Image 1 (tube, one colour):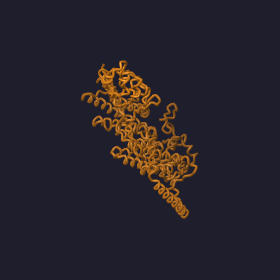
Image 2 (spheres, rainbow, N blue to C red):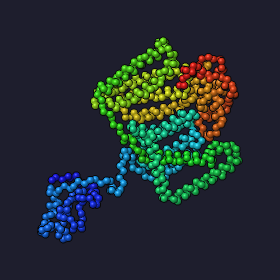
Image 3 (cartoon, helix red, strand yellow):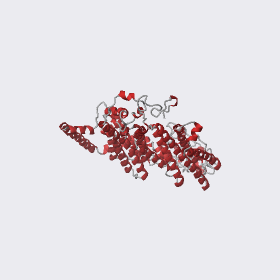
Image 4 (cartoon, rainbow, N blue to C red):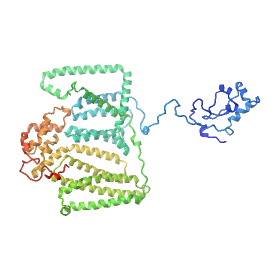
Length: 616
């Protein structure tokens, strides 16, 4: 009977639990077993011939008592050709035995995680501590240049950890890092909260990409938030570093603590003396030193922990990043050429028909449109902008799905993919231009708002994405994920630097100068970034537009590190030319900036008919 070599030659050498059948018994147990029982091989390893011993001679002779059988029994039992197969045994309930818990299987991302790095070196720990202290001292009063100040030691901690791990600075890593730090300049320059929020979120995403070094679509998408995965490991890694450094250099830690205490004592004593001797120096010292009180203790402690954990997570990621590029997306099953291309060709024809009508309209065919629809320029623009924006977004989804199922087996297939999708991208760019033209007409009629400038900026970025897709079709898609991520960061940076609130105020002031209509109720809610443009308005419109901003600036006691350049410039303008009109005069003005009864028709860019009111 044939044997199974895989079972007999198992290199693991793991034996079954005691008491299972088929396991060779030791020589001491052969006194109670029969000859056939002693000759059975082990189920885990091949049988080995045992030399005859005097103790085992008596049971091995059998009933006849013939001693010569002992010499021939071992060779016969050890012969694989004459050996009976062992009985099939049921597997044990658990790999570790019946009384042990089951062994945990590695997670799906275990292969993406590198080995645990060595404990954090002293340079990393010092930079992390500096980040935590600055976070507690500076971030409690608002956002400004303080966010950039806190980010510098955190970036140094990551750089020290990466150098200790042997990682090299690559061009894309430098691009992510510089872009993230540049985005943190937006809170230092602009007072408006919504561009600041976009800049901070984008800076976090680019910083996470710089630490991971991702390049594929899964790597870029997950790597932008992958820093969150290192929060727990970063804290443990930092604690290991603190324990090892403390054990190795207790004397040096004591020296550092004494030196720091002496330096702080000298600063406090002589700083107090100089401040009491000169009022100007006291004022300067008061502006430079953060105002920390016991009441702010819990909030400052929370900010200290946030800075500490964030810096440790960044350094831990720089030392041993998770390789999110290892995640792969299985391509879809290629479809037949006509099954794949025919729907997209029909879609291209639909886009071409729509664009032809748009060209007629943009070249002066509005009279025909008005005769057919009864809509004026602004109503026609408002009616279609949102639909065109959604059409642009859905086209990106169509392109992604088409690339998943596109045939790619031959050169003709690849040429067909480039021709069909390239045509769709070009037509979509024309749709983007049409949507922006509609927005321009609508803004010219009713004025610019935050929402309108935001969606226009998004439409411009989507057009940039389609240009990058066209370039990827010509030069290859290797850099497409990273190029789109860079374009998104650059768009957020440009959006913050142009100061959207200032652009909104500037456009509405020009509109007032041309038409004499302005929505003061909307403009007075803008941030301090709009003050230079609103300062050009005549009285009483100027004072009515700036009353809210002046009240906020006078009631603010933010220190220098939490004050943006936009706030400082607005405070200087209002200090030279303060608001002079009282509240009653502003209430006497209509929402369009003129006195009640002096103007009919529009009110601040919105129709009087409430049934046609358009919040957009």
